[in-house]
Length: 93
Image 1 (tube, rainbow, N blue to C red):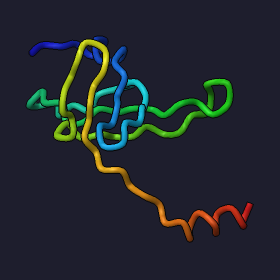
Image 2 (image 1 turned 135 degrees about the horizontal axis):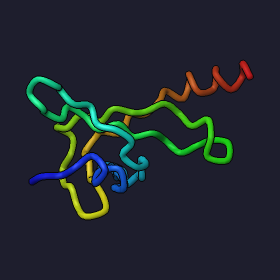
Image 3 (image 1 turned 90 degrees about the vertical axis):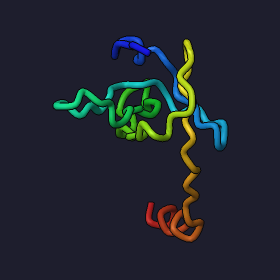
């Protein structure tokens, strides 16, 4: 399969573990000497009118299950946060 980076930019990334939409592919992490794609980088949605979004999240190439015409399915386990830490963060604010 041959694809260009611009073909990946218009594909939405969805996690099959929880069905969550993660965003669109922003960039690829490529190992230059071999020309091998190591990971895809997905930026989260913007927080303020599409600006000031969260940082990019690296999804390893091994997590990709399927690449379709308009979506990429990845299988990345959902990481639950500790509820005690969430309560501490809320109290500080």
